[in-house]
Image (cartoon, rainbow, N blue to C red; front, side, top):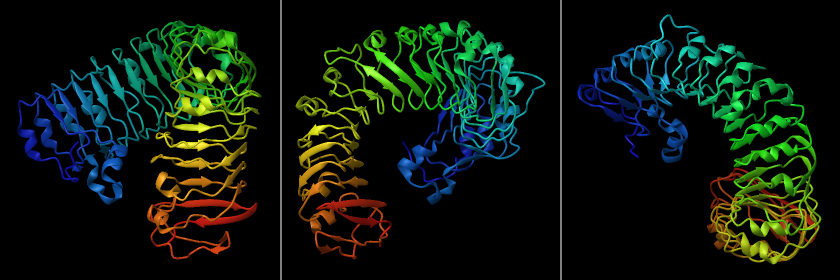
Length: 528
Protein backbone atom coordinates (compact mmCIF):
# COMPACT_ATOMS: atom_id res chain seq x y z
CA UNK A 1 0.00 0.00 0.00
CA UNK A 2 1.34 3.40 -1.00
CA UNK A 3 0.08 6.90 -0.33
CA UNK A 4 1.25 9.52 -2.78
CA UNK A 5 -0.98 12.21 -1.28
CA UNK A 6 -3.16 12.76 -4.34
CA UNK A 7 -0.34 13.81 -6.72
CA UNK A 8 -0.68 13.21 -10.45
CA UNK A 9 0.81 10.31 -12.33
CA UNK A 10 4.08 11.67 -13.80
CA UNK A 11 4.01 12.15 -17.57
CA UNK A 12 7.49 10.62 -17.91
CA UNK A 13 6.01 7.18 -17.12
CA UNK A 14 4.88 7.17 -20.74
CA UNK A 15 8.52 6.91 -21.84
CA UNK A 16 9.02 3.36 -20.53
CA UNK A 17 8.41 1.82 -23.94
CA UNK A 18 9.34 -1.74 -22.89
CA UNK A 19 7.11 -1.74 -19.80
CA UNK A 20 4.72 -4.71 -19.74
CA UNK A 21 3.18 -4.43 -16.26
CA UNK A 22 2.00 -1.25 -14.49
CA UNK A 23 0.02 -1.37 -11.24
CA UNK A 24 -0.76 1.97 -9.58
CA UNK A 25 -3.91 0.79 -7.77
CA UNK A 26 -4.92 2.18 -4.36
CA UNK A 27 -1.87 4.45 -4.25
CA UNK A 28 -3.82 7.69 -3.59
CA UNK A 29 -2.92 9.25 -6.91
CA UNK A 30 -5.18 11.96 -8.33
CA UNK A 31 -5.88 14.36 -11.14
CA UNK A 32 -5.93 13.72 -14.88
CA UNK A 33 -4.37 10.51 -16.11
CA UNK A 34 -1.65 11.63 -18.55
CA UNK A 35 -2.27 10.76 -22.20
CA UNK A 36 1.44 9.86 -22.44
CA UNK A 37 0.59 6.45 -20.96
CA UNK A 38 -0.72 5.67 -24.45
CA UNK A 39 2.92 5.42 -25.59
CA UNK A 40 3.35 2.16 -23.62
CA UNK A 41 2.79 -0.03 -26.66
CA UNK A 42 4.29 -3.11 -24.93
CA UNK A 43 2.03 -2.81 -21.88
CA UNK A 44 -0.04 -5.93 -21.19
CA UNK A 45 -1.35 -5.15 -17.69
CA UNK A 46 -2.62 -1.74 -16.50
CA UNK A 47 -4.29 -1.25 -13.11
CA UNK A 48 -5.25 2.28 -12.04
CA UNK A 49 -8.13 1.16 -9.82
CA UNK A 50 -9.17 3.31 -6.90
CA UNK A 51 -11.57 1.77 -4.37
CA UNK A 52 -13.32 4.51 -2.44
CA UNK A 53 -13.97 2.44 0.67
CA UNK A 54 -10.36 1.28 0.71
CA UNK A 55 -9.25 4.90 0.44
CA UNK A 56 -11.67 6.03 3.17
CA UNK A 57 -10.49 3.31 5.56
CA UNK A 58 -6.82 4.16 5.21
CA UNK A 59 -6.79 7.88 4.40
CA UNK A 60 -10.00 9.37 5.77
CA UNK A 61 -12.78 11.40 4.19
CA UNK A 62 -12.43 12.00 0.46
CA UNK A 63 -13.51 15.61 1.04
CA UNK A 64 -10.20 16.16 2.82
CA UNK A 65 -8.39 15.29 -0.40
CA UNK A 66 -10.65 15.74 -3.43
CA UNK A 67 -7.70 15.20 -5.77
CA UNK A 68 -7.62 11.58 -4.57
CA UNK A 69 -9.63 10.52 -7.64
CA UNK A 70 -7.96 9.82 -10.95
CA UNK A 71 -9.79 11.37 -13.91
CA UNK A 72 -10.02 10.40 -17.59
CA UNK A 73 -10.91 13.34 -19.83
CA UNK A 74 -10.37 11.50 -23.14
CA UNK A 75 -9.87 7.76 -23.45
CA UNK A 76 -8.53 7.71 -27.00
CA UNK A 77 -4.96 7.23 -25.71
CA UNK A 78 -6.02 3.80 -24.42
CA UNK A 79 -6.57 2.66 -28.02
CA UNK A 80 -2.79 2.89 -28.59
CA UNK A 81 -2.07 0.20 -25.98
CA UNK A 82 -1.99 -2.45 -28.69
CA UNK A 83 -0.57 -5.21 -26.43
CA UNK A 84 -2.98 -4.67 -23.53
CA UNK A 85 -4.64 -7.77 -22.11
CA UNK A 86 -5.82 -6.55 -18.69
CA UNK A 87 -7.32 -3.14 -17.84
CA UNK A 88 -8.67 -2.13 -14.43
CA UNK A 89 -9.92 1.44 -13.96
CA UNK A 90 -12.37 0.79 -11.15
CA UNK A 91 -13.12 4.07 -9.37
CA UNK A 92 -11.37 6.23 -11.99
CA UNK A 93 -13.79 9.02 -12.92
CA UNK A 94 -14.67 9.36 -16.61
CA UNK A 95 -15.75 12.78 -17.84
CA UNK A 96 -18.58 13.17 -20.34
CA UNK A 97 -17.65 12.32 -23.91
CA UNK A 98 -14.46 10.39 -23.17
CA UNK A 99 -15.16 7.85 -25.98
CA UNK A 100 -14.28 4.94 -23.71
CA UNK A 101 -16.14 2.32 -25.74
CA UNK A 102 -14.67 3.36 -29.06
CA UNK A 103 -11.15 3.32 -27.57
CA UNK A 104 -11.53 -0.10 -26.00
CA UNK A 105 -13.08 -1.62 -29.11
CA UNK A 106 -9.80 -0.99 -30.98
CA UNK A 107 -7.74 -3.13 -28.62
CA UNK A 108 -7.13 -6.46 -30.40
CA UNK A 109 -5.95 -8.60 -27.46
CA UNK A 110 -7.75 -7.33 -24.37
CA UNK A 111 -9.15 -10.12 -22.17
CA UNK A 112 -10.32 -8.31 -19.02
CA UNK A 113 -11.88 -4.85 -18.65
CA UNK A 114 -12.96 -3.50 -15.25
CA UNK A 115 -14.75 -0.13 -15.35
CA UNK A 116 -16.81 -0.32 -12.17
CA UNK A 117 -17.77 2.94 -10.41
CA UNK A 118 -16.37 5.19 -13.13
CA UNK A 119 -19.30 7.61 -13.34
CA UNK A 120 -20.31 6.36 -16.79
CA UNK A 121 -23.91 7.30 -17.56
CA UNK A 122 -24.25 6.63 -21.31
CA UNK A 123 -23.11 4.04 -23.79
CA UNK A 124 -23.72 3.32 -27.46
CA UNK A 125 -26.51 0.84 -28.06
CA UNK A 126 -24.72 -0.58 -31.12
CA UNK A 127 -21.25 -0.74 -32.66
CA UNK A 128 -20.63 -0.79 -36.44
CA UNK A 129 -17.71 -3.14 -35.97
CA UNK A 130 -17.04 -5.49 -33.05
CA UNK A 131 -13.37 -6.04 -32.23
CA UNK A 132 -13.73 -7.71 -28.80
CA UNK A 133 -12.72 -11.11 -30.13
CA UNK A 134 -10.80 -12.16 -26.99
CA UNK A 135 -12.75 -10.36 -24.25
CA UNK A 136 -13.57 -12.71 -21.38
CA UNK A 137 -14.37 -10.36 -18.46
CA UNK A 138 -16.37 -7.10 -18.65
CA UNK A 139 -17.33 -5.22 -15.50
CA UNK A 140 -19.46 -2.07 -15.93
CA UNK A 141 -21.12 -2.26 -12.51
CA UNK A 142 -21.94 0.63 -10.15
CA UNK A 143 -22.18 3.28 -12.85
CA UNK A 144 -25.26 5.25 -13.86
CA UNK A 145 -25.81 3.87 -17.35
CA UNK A 146 -29.38 4.82 -18.24
CA UNK A 147 -30.47 2.92 -21.35
CA UNK A 148 -31.60 -0.42 -22.67
CA UNK A 149 -28.99 -3.17 -22.32
CA UNK A 150 -26.85 -2.44 -25.43
CA UNK A 151 -27.09 -4.96 -28.22
CA UNK A 152 -23.35 -5.08 -28.91
CA UNK A 153 -22.82 -6.92 -25.63
CA UNK A 154 -24.55 -10.00 -27.02
CA UNK A 155 -22.10 -10.21 -29.91
CA UNK A 156 -19.11 -10.85 -27.64
CA UNK A 157 -19.26 -14.62 -27.86
CA UNK A 158 -16.05 -15.01 -25.84
CA UNK A 159 -17.53 -13.40 -22.68
CA UNK A 160 -17.39 -15.52 -19.53
CA UNK A 161 -18.03 -12.84 -16.90
CA UNK A 162 -20.47 -9.94 -17.39
CA UNK A 163 -21.29 -7.56 -14.54
CA UNK A 164 -23.85 -4.83 -15.28
CA UNK A 165 -25.04 -4.56 -11.68
CA UNK A 166 -26.27 -1.36 -10.03
CA UNK A 167 -26.87 0.79 -13.08
CA UNK A 168 -30.14 2.16 -14.46
CA UNK A 169 -30.69 -0.27 -17.31
CA UNK A 170 -34.25 -0.35 -18.64
CA UNK A 171 -36.43 -2.80 -20.52
CA UNK A 172 -36.06 -6.56 -20.49
CA UNK A 173 -33.34 -9.17 -20.47
CA UNK A 174 -33.42 -9.77 -24.24
CA UNK A 175 -33.56 -13.18 -25.96
CA UNK A 176 -30.15 -12.38 -27.50
CA UNK A 177 -28.66 -13.35 -24.12
CA UNK A 178 -28.47 -16.88 -25.54
CA UNK A 179 -25.61 -15.73 -27.80
CA UNK A 180 -23.31 -15.60 -24.78
CA UNK A 181 -22.90 -19.35 -24.78
CA UNK A 182 -19.60 -19.23 -22.85
CA UNK A 183 -20.98 -17.10 -20.00
CA UNK A 184 -20.17 -18.35 -16.50
CA UNK A 185 -21.25 -15.31 -14.46
CA UNK A 186 -24.01 -12.76 -15.12
CA UNK A 187 -24.86 -10.01 -12.65
CA UNK A 188 -27.78 -7.65 -13.34
CA UNK A 189 -28.48 -6.85 -9.69
CA UNK A 190 -29.65 -3.40 -8.66
CA UNK A 191 -31.16 -2.43 -12.01
CA UNK A 192 -34.56 -1.74 -10.52
CA UNK A 193 -36.12 -0.59 -13.78
CA UNK A 194 -35.45 -3.81 -15.65
CA UNK A 195 -38.82 -5.38 -16.36
CA UNK A 196 -39.88 -8.57 -14.68
CA UNK A 197 -39.96 -10.63 -17.84
CA UNK A 198 -37.00 -13.02 -17.88
CA UNK A 199 -36.39 -14.53 -21.29
CA UNK A 200 -36.63 -18.28 -21.62
CA UNK A 201 -33.31 -18.07 -23.43
CA UNK A 202 -31.60 -17.30 -20.12
CA UNK A 203 -32.22 -20.90 -19.18
CA UNK A 204 -30.23 -22.00 -22.25
CA UNK A 205 -26.94 -20.69 -20.84
CA UNK A 206 -25.56 -24.14 -20.16
CA UNK A 207 -22.27 -22.99 -18.61
CA UNK A 208 -23.69 -20.29 -16.29
CA UNK A 209 -22.54 -20.71 -12.69
CA UNK A 210 -23.44 -17.35 -11.14
CA UNK A 211 -26.69 -15.41 -11.68
CA UNK A 212 -27.30 -12.15 -9.80
CA UNK A 213 -30.83 -10.74 -10.14
CA UNK A 214 -31.29 -9.18 -6.70
CA UNK A 215 -32.93 -5.77 -6.27
CA UNK A 216 -34.70 -6.02 -9.66
CA UNK A 217 -38.42 -5.32 -9.83
CA UNK A 218 -39.44 -8.75 -11.11
CA UNK A 219 -42.89 -8.66 -9.43
CA UNK A 220 -43.96 -12.14 -10.49
CA UNK A 221 -44.53 -15.49 -8.83
CA UNK A 222 -41.41 -17.59 -8.53
CA UNK A 223 -43.13 -20.79 -9.69
CA UNK A 224 -44.01 -19.10 -12.99
CA UNK A 225 -40.35 -19.23 -14.10
CA UNK A 226 -40.26 -22.99 -14.59
CA UNK A 227 -39.74 -22.52 -18.35
CA UNK A 228 -36.55 -20.57 -17.56
CA UNK A 229 -35.06 -22.55 -14.72
CA UNK A 230 -35.81 -26.01 -16.03
CA UNK A 231 -33.48 -25.47 -18.99
CA UNK A 232 -29.87 -26.64 -19.05
CA UNK A 233 -28.98 -23.81 -16.66
CA UNK A 234 -30.07 -26.12 -13.86
CA UNK A 235 -27.09 -28.40 -14.55
CA UNK A 236 -24.44 -25.70 -14.07
CA UNK A 237 -25.79 -22.97 -11.76
CA UNK A 238 -23.94 -22.66 -8.44
CA UNK A 239 -25.12 -19.26 -7.18
CA UNK A 240 -28.59 -17.70 -7.51
CA UNK A 241 -29.31 -14.30 -5.98
CA UNK A 242 -32.93 -13.08 -6.19
CA UNK A 243 -33.11 -11.05 -2.98
CA UNK A 244 -35.78 -8.32 -2.83
CA UNK A 245 -37.18 -8.79 -6.32
CA UNK A 246 -40.88 -8.61 -5.32
CA UNK A 247 -41.28 -12.33 -5.90
CA UNK A 248 -44.49 -13.97 -4.77
CA UNK A 249 -46.00 -17.42 -5.09
CA UNK A 250 -44.50 -20.52 -3.52
CA UNK A 251 -41.19 -22.39 -3.58
CA UNK A 252 -41.43 -24.72 -6.61
CA UNK A 253 -40.15 -28.28 -6.69
CA UNK A 254 -37.76 -27.50 -9.57
CA UNK A 255 -35.50 -25.65 -7.12
CA UNK A 256 -34.34 -29.07 -5.99
CA UNK A 257 -33.01 -29.82 -9.49
CA UNK A 258 -30.08 -27.39 -9.15
CA UNK A 259 -27.77 -30.17 -8.04
CA UNK A 260 -24.64 -27.95 -8.12
CA UNK A 261 -26.22 -25.00 -6.29
CA UNK A 262 -24.05 -23.69 -3.45
CA UNK A 263 -25.74 -20.35 -2.69
CA UNK A 264 -29.49 -19.68 -2.86
CA UNK A 265 -30.84 -16.28 -1.81
CA UNK A 266 -34.58 -15.65 -2.13
CA UNK A 267 -34.83 -13.39 0.92
CA UNK A 268 -36.87 -10.22 1.30
CA UNK A 269 -39.74 -11.29 -0.95
CA UNK A 270 -43.37 -12.33 -0.48
CA UNK A 271 -42.98 -16.06 -1.03
CA UNK A 272 -45.48 -18.05 1.00
CA UNK A 273 -46.35 -21.63 1.79
CA UNK A 274 -44.17 -24.44 3.13
CA UNK A 275 -40.58 -25.28 2.30
CA UNK A 276 -40.87 -28.24 -0.09
CA UNK A 277 -39.09 -31.50 0.58
CA UNK A 278 -37.42 -31.17 -2.84
CA UNK A 279 -35.22 -28.38 -1.46
CA UNK A 280 -33.53 -31.05 0.62
CA UNK A 281 -31.98 -32.46 -2.55
CA UNK A 282 -29.54 -29.54 -2.72
CA UNK A 283 -26.65 -31.50 -1.26
CA UNK A 284 -23.99 -28.97 -2.38
CA UNK A 285 -25.68 -26.04 -0.64
CA UNK A 286 -23.34 -23.87 1.46
CA UNK A 287 -25.53 -20.77 2.00
CA UNK A 288 -29.34 -20.65 2.17
CA UNK A 289 -31.15 -17.33 2.65
CA UNK A 290 -34.96 -17.45 2.88
CA UNK A 291 -35.49 -14.74 5.50
CA UNK A 292 -38.17 -12.04 5.38
CA UNK A 293 -40.81 -13.97 3.47
CA UNK A 294 -44.18 -15.44 4.45
CA UNK A 295 -43.11 -19.06 4.65
CA UNK A 296 -44.97 -21.27 7.09
CA UNK A 297 -45.34 -24.91 7.98
CA UNK A 298 -43.16 -27.49 9.69
CA UNK A 299 -39.50 -28.21 8.88
CA UNK A 300 -38.38 -31.64 10.01
CA UNK A 301 -34.95 -33.16 10.57
CA UNK A 302 -35.27 -35.08 7.30
CA UNK A 303 -35.28 -31.84 5.31
CA UNK A 304 -31.84 -30.96 6.66
CA UNK A 305 -30.35 -34.44 6.21
CA UNK A 306 -28.51 -33.73 2.94
CA UNK A 307 -27.22 -30.29 3.93
CA UNK A 308 -23.82 -31.62 5.01
CA UNK A 309 -21.95 -28.64 3.52
CA UNK A 310 -24.23 -25.90 4.82
CA UNK A 311 -22.48 -23.02 6.64
CA UNK A 312 -24.99 -20.13 6.53
CA UNK A 313 -28.70 -20.65 7.21
CA UNK A 314 -31.20 -17.79 7.50
CA UNK A 315 -34.87 -18.63 7.99
CA UNK A 316 -35.69 -15.62 10.17
CA UNK A 317 -38.80 -13.44 9.89
CA UNK A 318 -41.00 -16.30 8.70
CA UNK A 319 -43.66 -18.37 10.43
CA UNK A 320 -41.88 -21.70 10.27
CA UNK A 321 -42.00 -24.38 12.94
CA UNK A 322 -38.67 -26.18 13.41
CA UNK A 323 -39.56 -29.68 14.57
CA UNK A 324 -36.14 -30.76 15.83
CA UNK A 325 -35.73 -33.16 18.75
CA UNK A 326 -33.31 -32.47 21.59
CA UNK A 327 -31.09 -35.41 20.58
CA UNK A 328 -30.94 -34.40 16.91
CA UNK A 329 -27.41 -34.44 15.48
CA UNK A 330 -27.13 -31.71 12.81
CA UNK A 331 -25.45 -32.95 9.61
CA UNK A 332 -23.69 -29.60 9.12
CA UNK A 333 -21.28 -27.28 10.93
CA UNK A 334 -22.90 -23.87 10.62
CA UNK A 335 -21.05 -20.61 11.04
CA UNK A 336 -24.18 -18.45 10.97
CA UNK A 337 -27.68 -19.43 12.04
CA UNK A 338 -30.65 -17.06 11.97
CA UNK A 339 -34.05 -18.45 12.98
CA UNK A 340 -35.59 -15.38 14.63
CA UNK A 341 -39.42 -15.42 14.68
CA UNK A 342 -39.56 -19.13 13.87
CA UNK A 343 -40.97 -21.50 16.49
CA UNK A 344 -38.10 -23.39 18.08
CA UNK A 345 -39.13 -23.73 21.76
CA UNK A 346 -40.24 -24.31 24.37
CA UNK A 347 -37.03 -26.24 25.20
CA UNK A 348 -33.62 -24.70 24.66
CA UNK A 349 -32.16 -26.56 21.65
CA UNK A 350 -29.59 -29.05 22.94
CA UNK A 351 -28.35 -29.76 19.40
CA UNK A 352 -26.64 -26.36 19.39
CA UNK A 353 -23.86 -28.01 21.37
CA UNK A 354 -22.88 -29.83 18.16
CA UNK A 355 -22.32 -26.58 16.22
CA UNK A 356 -18.81 -25.70 17.36
CA UNK A 357 -18.13 -23.09 14.64
CA UNK A 358 -21.05 -20.73 15.23
CA UNK A 359 -20.09 -17.04 15.06
CA UNK A 360 -23.55 -15.49 14.47
CA UNK A 361 -26.69 -16.76 16.19
CA UNK A 362 -30.18 -15.26 16.12
CA UNK A 363 -32.86 -17.13 18.08
CA UNK A 364 -34.97 -14.11 18.98
CA UNK A 365 -38.74 -14.55 19.35
CA UNK A 366 -38.57 -18.33 19.00
CA UNK A 367 -40.88 -19.17 21.98
CA UNK A 368 -38.10 -20.65 24.12
CA UNK A 369 -39.15 -20.76 27.78
CA UNK A 370 -36.36 -22.72 29.38
CA UNK A 371 -33.22 -22.20 31.39
CA UNK A 372 -30.13 -21.54 29.34
CA UNK A 373 -27.69 -24.41 30.00
CA UNK A 374 -24.18 -23.81 31.36
CA UNK A 375 -22.59 -25.55 28.37
CA UNK A 376 -23.86 -22.80 26.09
CA UNK A 377 -21.61 -20.18 27.67
CA UNK A 378 -18.65 -22.56 27.82
CA UNK A 379 -18.98 -23.64 24.18
CA UNK A 380 -19.52 -20.37 22.32
CA UNK A 381 -16.84 -17.96 23.51
CA UNK A 382 -15.87 -17.42 19.86
CA UNK A 383 -19.26 -15.91 18.98
CA UNK A 384 -19.54 -12.45 17.34
CA UNK A 385 -23.28 -11.76 17.26
CA UNK A 386 -25.79 -13.24 19.67
CA UNK A 387 -29.51 -12.38 19.77
CA UNK A 388 -31.80 -14.49 21.93
CA UNK A 389 -34.13 -11.62 22.83
CA UNK A 390 -37.92 -11.74 23.26
CA UNK A 391 -38.19 -15.24 24.68
CA UNK A 392 -38.93 -16.58 28.17
CA UNK A 393 -35.40 -17.75 28.95
CA UNK A 394 -34.49 -18.01 32.63
CA UNK A 395 -31.32 -18.35 34.64
CA UNK A 396 -28.28 -16.19 35.23
CA UNK A 397 -25.53 -15.08 32.92
CA UNK A 398 -21.92 -15.71 33.98
CA UNK A 399 -19.11 -13.27 33.40
CA UNK A 400 -18.22 -13.31 29.70
CA UNK A 401 -14.72 -11.88 29.87
CA UNK A 402 -13.40 -14.55 27.50
CA UNK A 403 -15.91 -13.55 24.76
CA UNK A 404 -13.29 -11.32 23.15
CA UNK A 405 -14.86 -11.30 19.65
CA UNK A 406 -18.29 -10.16 20.80
CA UNK A 407 -19.73 -7.38 18.64
CA UNK A 408 -23.52 -7.59 19.15
CA UNK A 409 -25.17 -9.01 22.29
CA UNK A 410 -28.93 -8.88 22.85
CA UNK A 411 -30.62 -10.74 25.71
CA UNK A 412 -33.51 -8.27 26.14
CA UNK A 413 -37.06 -9.24 27.07
CA UNK A 414 -36.37 -12.50 28.88
CA UNK A 415 -36.34 -13.56 32.56
CA UNK A 416 -32.63 -13.47 33.32
CA UNK A 417 -31.71 -12.68 36.90
CA UNK A 418 -28.67 -12.27 39.09
CA UNK A 419 -25.86 -9.73 38.70
CA UNK A 420 -24.95 -8.11 35.40
CA UNK A 421 -22.28 -10.10 33.58
CA UNK A 422 -18.82 -8.64 33.03
CA UNK A 423 -17.45 -8.25 29.52
CA UNK A 424 -14.04 -7.79 27.98
CA UNK A 425 -14.54 -7.02 24.30
CA UNK A 426 -12.83 -4.09 22.63
CA UNK A 427 -15.18 -4.33 19.63
CA UNK A 428 -18.55 -4.74 21.37
CA UNK A 429 -20.93 -2.30 19.65
CA UNK A 430 -24.38 -3.10 21.07
CA UNK A 431 -25.31 -4.44 24.49
CA UNK A 432 -29.01 -4.82 25.34
CA UNK A 433 -29.93 -6.48 28.63
CA UNK A 434 -33.20 -4.59 29.11
CA UNK A 435 -36.52 -6.03 30.30
CA UNK A 436 -35.08 -8.74 32.51
CA UNK A 437 -34.62 -9.14 36.28
CA UNK A 438 -30.92 -8.43 36.63
CA UNK A 439 -30.07 -7.00 40.05
CA UNK A 440 -27.22 -5.32 41.84
CA UNK A 441 -24.99 -2.49 40.71
CA UNK A 442 -23.46 -1.56 37.38
CA UNK A 443 -19.81 -2.62 37.30
CA UNK A 444 -17.37 0.18 37.98
CA UNK A 445 -15.07 -0.83 35.10
CA UNK A 446 -17.81 -1.01 32.48
CA UNK A 447 -16.18 1.73 30.43
CA UNK A 448 -12.80 0.03 30.32
CA UNK A 449 -14.15 -3.37 29.35
CA UNK A 450 -16.23 -2.10 26.38
CA UNK A 451 -14.49 1.01 25.00
CA UNK A 452 -16.23 0.93 21.58
CA UNK A 453 -19.79 0.44 22.82
CA UNK A 454 -22.31 2.67 21.00
CA UNK A 455 -25.63 1.36 22.28
CA UNK A 456 -26.32 0.28 25.86
CA UNK A 457 -29.73 -0.49 27.35
CA UNK A 458 -30.14 -1.76 30.91
CA UNK A 459 -33.72 -0.55 31.28
CA UNK A 460 -36.47 -2.31 33.24
CA UNK A 461 -34.30 -4.40 35.53
CA UNK A 462 -33.86 -4.43 39.34
CA UNK A 463 -30.58 -2.53 39.41
CA UNK A 464 -29.60 -0.37 42.34
CA UNK A 465 -26.74 1.78 43.48
CA UNK A 466 -25.17 4.57 41.49
CA UNK A 467 -24.20 4.87 37.87
CA UNK A 468 -20.38 4.78 37.94
CA UNK A 469 -19.50 8.35 37.00
CA UNK A 470 -15.90 8.18 38.20
CA UNK A 471 -13.21 10.01 36.32
CA UNK A 472 -11.76 6.62 35.39
CA UNK A 473 -14.85 5.80 33.37
CA UNK A 474 -15.05 9.25 31.89
CA UNK A 475 -11.43 9.00 30.80
CA UNK A 476 -12.40 5.78 28.98
CA UNK A 477 -15.08 7.77 27.05
CA UNK A 478 -17.91 6.93 29.44
CA UNK A 479 -19.05 3.55 28.25
CA UNK A 480 -20.17 4.23 24.71
CA UNK A 481 -19.91 7.92 24.21
CA UNK A 482 -18.11 9.32 21.23
CA UNK A 483 -18.40 12.62 19.32
CA UNK A 484 -20.35 14.81 21.61
CA UNK A 485 -22.74 17.73 21.64
CA UNK A 486 -24.99 17.41 24.60
CA UNK A 487 -28.40 17.59 26.12
CA UNK A 488 -28.54 16.10 29.59
CA UNK A 489 -31.71 16.12 31.63
CA UNK A 490 -32.01 13.69 34.48
CA UNK A 491 -31.38 12.77 38.05
CA UNK A 492 -29.81 9.35 38.51
CA UNK A 493 -29.77 7.71 41.94
CA UNK A 494 -30.43 11.06 43.49
CA UNK A 495 -27.36 12.69 41.94
CA UNK A 496 -27.53 15.52 39.45
CA UNK A 497 -25.61 14.62 36.32
CA UNK A 498 -22.76 17.00 35.53
CA UNK A 499 -23.35 19.19 32.50
CA UNK A 500 -19.66 19.70 31.83
CA UNK A 501 -18.87 16.78 29.53
CA UNK A 502 -16.15 18.24 27.35
CA UNK A 503 -13.94 15.19 27.99
CA UNK A 504 -16.26 12.95 26.01
CA UNK A 505 -15.54 12.58 22.30
CA UNK A 506 -16.42 10.73 19.12
CA UNK A 507 -20.12 9.51 18.70
CA UNK A 508 -23.82 9.96 19.10
CA UNK A 509 -25.35 8.37 22.13
CA UNK A 510 -28.65 7.34 23.55
CA UNK A 511 -28.56 5.68 26.98
CA UNK A 512 -31.60 4.55 28.89
CA UNK A 513 -31.22 3.92 32.58
CA UNK A 514 -33.99 2.53 34.74
CA UNK A 515 -33.22 2.46 38.47
CA UNK A 516 -35.56 1.24 41.21
CA UNK A 517 -38.24 0.82 38.54
CA UNK A 518 -38.11 4.60 37.91
CA UNK A 519 -37.44 5.80 34.40
CA UNK A 520 -34.60 8.25 33.78
CA UNK A 521 -33.44 9.18 30.30
CA UNK A 522 -29.89 10.19 29.69
CA UNK A 523 -29.44 11.78 26.27
CA UNK A 524 -26.03 12.57 24.86
CA UNK A 525 -26.31 13.77 21.33
CA UNK A 526 -23.34 15.67 19.90
CA UNK A 527 -22.35 17.30 23.18
CA UNK A 528 -19.72 19.96 23.66
